[in-house]
Image (cartoon, rainbow over all chains, first blue to last red; front, side):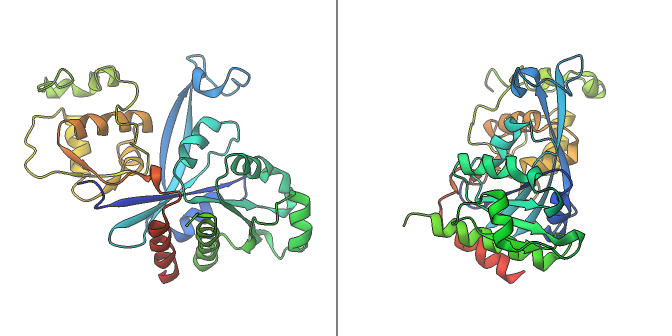
Length: 184
Length: 120
């Protein structure tokens, strides 16, 4: 049975309120679904137990969507949990992923720094997509790059996470970038 | 039947059975390739008696479906869903698609995804 049906993953990351679920919903062929990962204290890290209940477990919700890209291949888009501290879940999402779209909101660019840092350190291909959801962007691409300290090879694009084509274009940008990093 | 199998039980009490019992105390899938994006499908002719919660899971797999989707539909945590899928794959009830694990540097897959996105 192996190999008849393939899965591909893209992680949609970014700080709280940057439009991750909106982005997933705009391109997904199904309304975004929510699944849960239940973590025990052991999976969260000893230095950060906030949010854990008295039984030592916490539930992390993950929103995801699906795009059937061919009869054999389905692409799954996973939004990262709202709280950046659940790196345990990020590791599972990032493993084997094509790459990540890091959404950014220019009013609080710093909320997307942890995502940029994460994918850089793990050498996961990623693009930064500045969400224009909140009106025209007052900053140039160069200004944003400088503020986020993005390496020159990381593509930066603008998008409207509510628009299917705009979100699609950001994904296309990511896959092209991922292709450019594949050693042939 | 292996040691990990069971032969059904009192169906009316199924929901009273703690979930860790349903997965025989397993806390992680044995097939470590099993990813939340891995797709599975019900195999024809797999006529084993299943607990209702497993039957419910298999019923979702008439067509290819991912572990994450199964978890969302059954309202079960991902880790538990993964272990349940793992048990069913071992029993030959579900068939596995290719894992997402090794796709990161797979040029053919990337090209297929790119072409598909551009058609959207």
